[in-house]
Length: 140
Image (cartoon, rainbow, N blue to C red; front, side):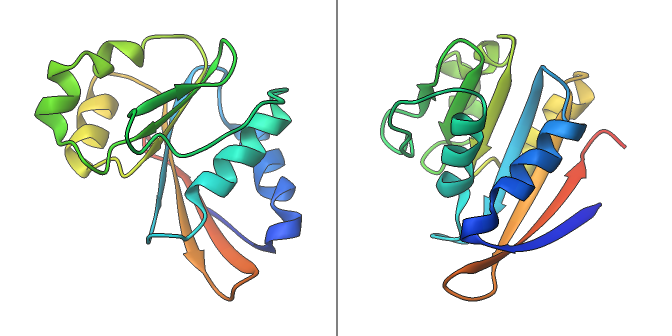
């Protein structure tokens, strides 16, 4: 596990580290309290991957696509069974990075068991401007 503590102005250091360790096709679970910075990190990742459009949390739409190989999910309102029944599980086979906010342990376990490359970024607010990012592979 790698821990990085930075100000929000230095969030690119987290993105640079993720880019150096995460495979081209991966699922990245973003965990943390409400307003900890999950969507802020998603915005920085999208920018680094060349997406110039608006990045927002897909709270009501469940999924946003940013270009061809960056996908962003907010699963706060749905459980594992609903995730599977509405076809989002199959979306994870698309090439690229899949950023998942509010992914439950049942989904993490199922994806790791199925052989997907999964990572977790746990975000903790230290101050209004500072966050600690704990990054780990779930496949180890």
